Image 1 (cartoon, rainbow, N blue to C red):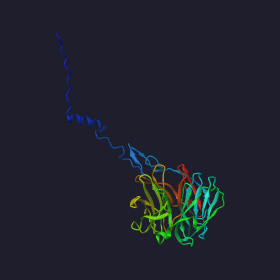
Image 2: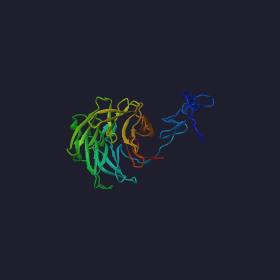
Image 3: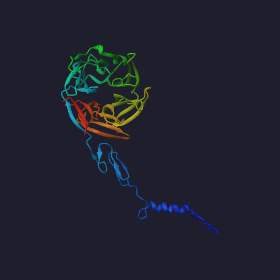
Image 4: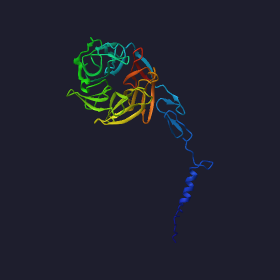
Length: 369
């Protein structure tokens, strides 16, 4: 006789029983729900709590991100420059710097070699005084064999604007310096705007044209390198009449220009703005919270770096210049205590060269600590 075997069928678990099982699994010994491990944790300086531990932003450490970690060491590369402003680095690692001189048509473009030797490249640039400070050429930019220079002073020592283009393909440090002459100018910006001009910043656009931040005309201009013609991309007169554009860079992602607006008197803290300018000239409000924003750069990780000139209290305060990094919604102080910095450029190794308009006329080199 054959025997039969019937497999037992498990009894279904009711939803209520399943709820009790899950409730007990999530409960602590005293019967309460498991606490949020980050509930009692306060992360300072923009840190974020993850599983009960603070993850700190770059430049901070400690259980609560309360400690400041030096990111750079500072070295004075050279002193004795007469009111340096713009700075650029070439493929050989040599630095190109604009200096305003003594406001007696003695501005210069100078070259500092990788072993810190100083040479004049162009002398006798127009220079004059503005509010007691010598001014001459501002920004400069190397594109292949060409050096582009934003000259903010006319030959008659009045503020103005000329865009210079100089062939540097045959230049070697130590060559006889060139004397400035009008043939170096490829565009008379003063004549184009028909009024006040004071060109500051330069950027190379994706179309190969030169984009100009004009602090006098309060506008962004475009120099077409093929047609040798100027045009206006946009004006900032309707954005903030107490702020002027000082620097412009092109950011390939998302394919727009970023422009610093240096806030005018009384130079309020946190009132300098970085605007986003589309290629059609539309102006978008970009980033705020800066003070005396004077130069821009893009970090190796794609974040925006801003150079602040100084804070203001009955005059600009010495040793209050900063390099700031915009990381997400946070503004991180990468370096502080700079003496009236005007421009900076990457050294290619996560460090920066900075022009300093202090009494010593310095170039400072910041290297990762």
